[in-house]
Amino acid sequence: MAGHSKWANIRHKKAKEDKKRSKIFSKHIKEITVAAREGGGDPDGNPRLSLAIDNAKADNVPKDNIERAIKRGTGEDTGGASYEEATFEGYGPGGIAYFIEVTTDNNNRTVGEIRHIFTKHGGNMGTSGSVGYMFEQKGMIQVPSDDLDDEEFMLAAIDAGATDVDTDDEMFVVFTEREELFEVRNRLEKSGYDIESATLIREAVTETKVDESTAEANLKMMEKFEDNDDVNNVFTNMLMDEETIALAENI
Image (cartoon, rainbow, N blue to C red; front, side):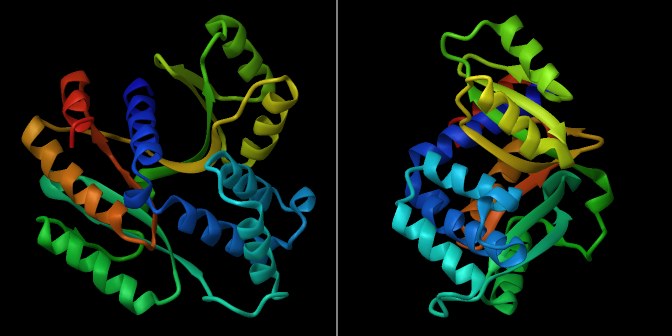
């Protein structure tokens, strides 16, 4: 999973550095609103909401904004937009599979925008299920690796229930079963580790290796998806070697 986690970290760092592009606050507020609507406003009894709040706090979303989003989700505050979640599937340049997760207040608008991006960049939007079977949902937890002993942390993560652990110069990336994300996050936190983020991802079951030109075409399309206010996550089955990942850091 080394390539996957390294690219995940690059995307995470780019998002942290570019607040305008990633629309961090807006996406956190949407996630909190939907989580509260589906599971109630008490984070102690709603794991998804608890994760959403922690991730929002990590990106410095103000407490008042978080509380308003919870009230909007539970119906205590009837102001603001009503959000729904949706997914889109399709193919990018070179036949790369895409699975896109969105939260929107206007599904018709979002469908048109997603289809336009696919078409403009040489891809095509598919039907529901066309590529979904190519991805497996897992949990991913990011922990800053500063001053941590690699072996000690990896053993602690496995003891906490992780299925795999990867690392680069700045971050440990802990993978979990989908249903275990919340519990593994809590166990690591109770063990004294700082959690940068904890989220569900979709990992490609089979990856497709690409050359630089195909990678560049797909990365440009991914940027357009991620620029869209409604898009939460973009997952692909693109496999990049070290040289191509280095290229990606500069796109």
